[in-house]
Image (cartoon, rainbow, N blue to C red; front, side, top):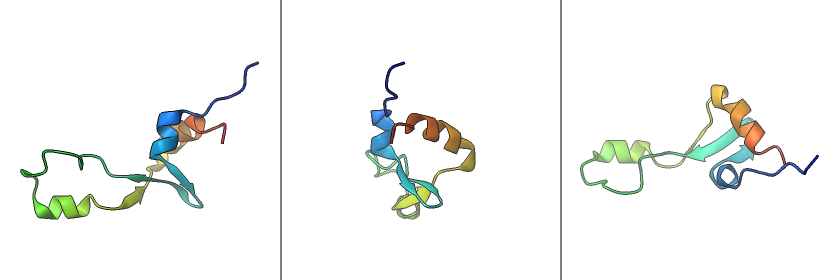
Length: 64
């Protein structure tokens, strides 16, 4: 059986923490002039991954 490989795209997007995975918010790269300041402010920083998505990310990062 071949070695398990890490999904390189997922490795760039998710970071493992004690309580799950943290990730950046989407919709914050371009065409931001039409977005309200409040919305842009709320999309700053990182948040924890939803519990429903955790098994999929675990599978993609299994080689770590």
